Structure formats: structure tokens, C-alpha cells
Image (cartoon, rainbow, N blue to C red; front, side):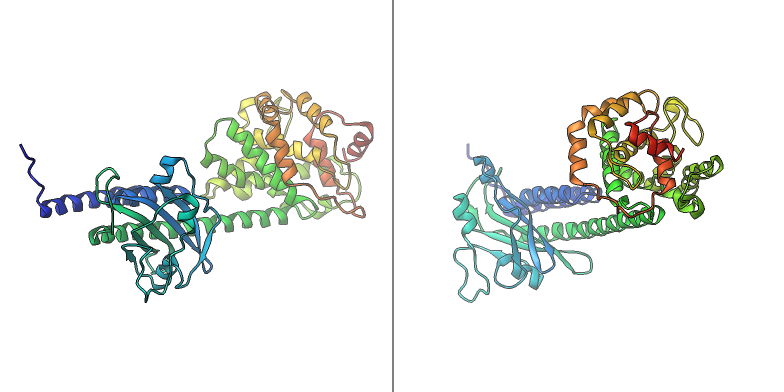
Length: 435
């Protein structure tokens, strides 16, 4: 018995329903995406399904250029071939199909890229096909715009297939597919703009934090390097304690604020040329309380965590720290993590009042202080991830302080309170001068 052929009108209706379902589903999913790479992967997968095609390339507009962000091709993937286009760019002009679309903000539906009309302002570059032994034919190129009409990128689909499950002959992209893909591209453009704005805000926030830290520790000639290293050590340890990526990103910013309370410490204490009195040392210790008071109560995850870290990073596992003499797990994990990260970097770094310790001496000190100054679990995590710790240390080398600088007694006190065991005799004498 012969199968009854599907009525073309009914088929169009079913296809339209499928496309609308894809748009609704992708729209809901894209609204929850906060990462640009995840967005691009989701967009490419949805576009290829909607276009029933072999390949998809996503370009991102970047200062007059279109930069390849993602290339997918089912045929090449089945061969185990990866497209070598990661750092490739094309200008936004009329010489290429993608550049033409970004310039005109109008889609292109090309039946065969090797047979362009003579009057076409752009040409097709076959180098990718030659490089990968592939044959591009039909192409649909769509601008990706935000709600204001600004071009954020270009979506390019290759080789529409008439058969189901990505099989059959290559044909031009149908007009109805073009319409739905334009809607998908618009969705992605809006989300991409929001992600860009969030990323720009994030960069601005990081720079603001760094400037704030610099202002609070202006007496320290190596603040920048110390902050970069210490925050990365903290993130590594925090992640290994079991916290997720989102929490670790908060830690990265919050840990930079650990000594922000020093901005309220009087110059008479910070810049005193001689030994601090016990009363002055008590004033110095107040930077933990002042930092907490400055940062607390803000409607911001990283400022909230920063307040906790500022308040607790000088507490010690055995209860001998300050300002509240918290003990063991009464100290928040954020404070315990930064305590170790801060001390490790301080001991490894040269200061105007001391030389850097030999690395084996630093390791010995951390082990000796496990269970007294530091949480033993965090010390164990530190040594379990020593290779990565040393990579961070090498990535952000410390700069030598000026030899003519006057030693800061406040910095000496900080060194004194960072560790409980004595270093080599010469360094020990330097630290005792500040005690």
C-alpha cells in the first residue's frame, strides 16, 4: 500500500509550529544565560536545528572587524576535523558576505557561493573549503542586532538539507526558514548586548575595587602584585573547599578588600618612623573592624563577603587572633582561606623592612602553623595544589621595593601578626623591632 503524501500546506503549518516552539524554547533559555560562550553554543545549535543545515559560524563585531567566535560543522565533526578559525577576523566592509551583511544590516540568502552574480559586491573565499576538503554551497547570512539596531555580530549558516535528520541534498535556504532565523538572531542580539553590558560593568567594578585597595594601602609599593596573587590563591583554595564558580568569582573580588580598613588608620600610626607602642598597635589592629564597618550592609555579594573577610582574616584557628579571638570553625571559611593566602604571599615577598623568605622556609612555616594559625584542612589543600599555587606566583612576580624607602612600622606589625613562628635570625630581628 502506497503511503499518502503529506499535503504541502499541512507540512508548512507543522514546520511553522516546530520553528515557533524552537523560538519560544530558545528565548526562555537564552534569557537565563549569563556567559557569552554558552550563549553562542546554544544559539549555533538552535540555528542549525532550525535551518536543518550542516554548519554554522558566529561572528562578533569588534571595532570594525568581525571576529570568529564559534564555528560548528556536522560534516567536519563527523570526520574529527576541527575548523582552524579561532583567531580569524574579516573587516566589516562590502568585500565578504559577512562584512556585507554587517554593513547593510540586511540578510543574504545565497543559493551557491561558487556562482555569485557578476554584479555581486562581495566574493567568496574558498580557503576554508580547500583547507578542510569541504564543499560550501548554499549560505544564509543574518545580522545579529540589538534592540537599537546596533550590529553585534553575524550568524552564518551553510548548506541547507532537504532531508530529515540532516541528510539529503543541499538546496537553498527556504524563505520561511530565513524569517524564523532572523527572529532567533534578534533574540540573541538582545541577550548579547545585555551580556556585554554586564561584562563591562564587571570590568569597571574590578577596576574600582583595585583603585579602592590602592588608596587604602598607598604606603605599600607592591600592593598590585600582592592583591593579584593573594586573590588568586584565595580563589583556588576556596574552590577546593567545594564552593562553586559563582561563589569563587565573588571571592576573587572580595579578597582584594581584606585590608581596606587601613584607609582609616591615622598617618601617625601608619607612618611612624619608630617602634609602635602597645596602644598604637591596638589602633593598627582596628583596621579589621573599620574594614567591616565600611563594607557591611551593602546590597552586593562581593561587598558582603568582603566585610566578612576584612573582619576575620586575622583570626587564628587556635583562638589567639584578632579582633574577636574566634576559634576553629567559628571563623568563616572565607576568613580562614584569606588568612593563609595573605600570609603565604607576605612571606614570599620582599619588603623594605625584610627580604623574601626562601620558599622552603615558607612551606615549613605554613606546616608549623597548621592547627594553630591556620585551618589544617586548608593547609592540606594548599600543598595538594602546590603546582598551581606556584604558577600563580610566577605569573604575577613581585616588584622590588625602592631601597631608599623608609620602612613602614605598620607593615612590620602586619608581618609580625601574620605568623607565629620565628624566621631565620636576621629576619627575626627585623620583625622583633616592630613588636
